[in-house]
Image 1: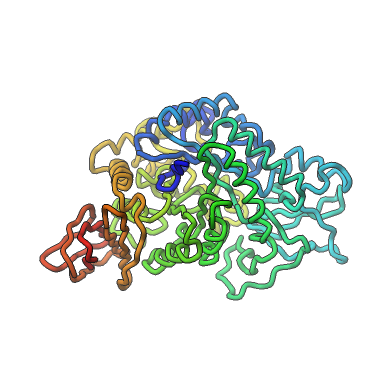
Image 2: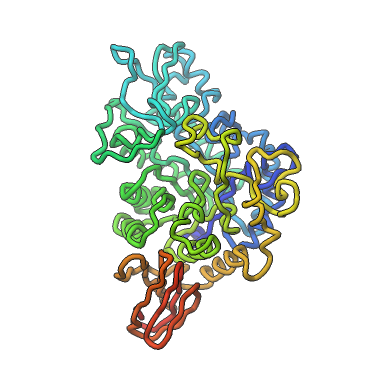
Length: 536
């Protein structure tokens, strides 16, 4: 078994926003195929596609109405097959977002389920009677605001939805549902897909007894949509039955050659790291998992160290997937701006830090350009939470605006028509055609990915942390034939360290060694090459 994914760099494509081939303002599969050379030239190993399945697009494809069809917005199955073939011809693997915890209310399964309480699909979703006073059966909240229950007058019952009311949750306690879901996964594996990114992987099962959640132990600073955080979400997700389903999925993928599954753990804080460990332990569950632990505003050495060491303790035989940005959070260069000397220095710094982490690495389209968050106006929004709770919630549109290819072309080369989200000047300025020089952020990403792949220490070395005060993060990556010490200054101030042993800077930014002093300026970092003694 090759297990290509263990040291891979995975590039996330948000299909709506990558390349439009038809002029309708929405990216599509043919557009992605036309830009595969850009992805291959980065040196990444795999493409992760956000959902391309048939959908009413109420939640931008995360509301699936047919698991076995490509949405016409993106093309058809022939376009999908051609994209897979062209990616494979360039040495790229392809995985696709699988949204299994819920469907669209337009899915045929749900249409039949809501007809009556005694048909073939009646128990395929989570239905429950009202309480005696007519209120929902539990106190569970939806992520998008309001209760996680919607009353359906046709059945005279509530159905559960962790997200939009148009995204009813499937009942994974029903073995017929499990079997149907496994069949949909098999359909795509048979077409040559190399694996899955499993959306909200800890949401598949609910508490069969429908117990209400207790209040959170510590009251959070609640945002407009985050009543969810006011509860300890014990009964609406991360149920023990989840493990059994993951094992069934793993048995399916084991029937194919070197397939990979990475699960998105929908949880914040240290608990997310524990779940990552639990879901990847041994070799019968997920190959990898990632959480939102590094996708938030926290930017300090203790936080990053706790994430990595927490995973090491919780899953010594598991495998992590680390990323700093995706389609759900503000872009990292903007998110961490208060800690940055400049946008470009933060882009380089974040790239170097991410590439030094043990495990598999994920980057999000535009990250390789040092792209920033797009400032949105209300009339430009499409994201449901932002539309409902603006201006206290800015939503996710700002990180989903189109990829920029040619600065002076209409819509920066994304589309000849009006794009579904605007392309604005600050983003167009970072277009691919503006970054062809050796000093560009794009060239930097290519160089860093190549360095990681060619470094035994970074590709497969074990991690041991070094105790340094904030804002310095330091650790060694040690393989049989190479040891590197990676040191990062997570601030705008200069810091100096005494050298304990000789070392040379193999790669760095704003870093220098003079006599026995190691200096890191603001956002400085270094990969230090040295002998058996740690130099700092």
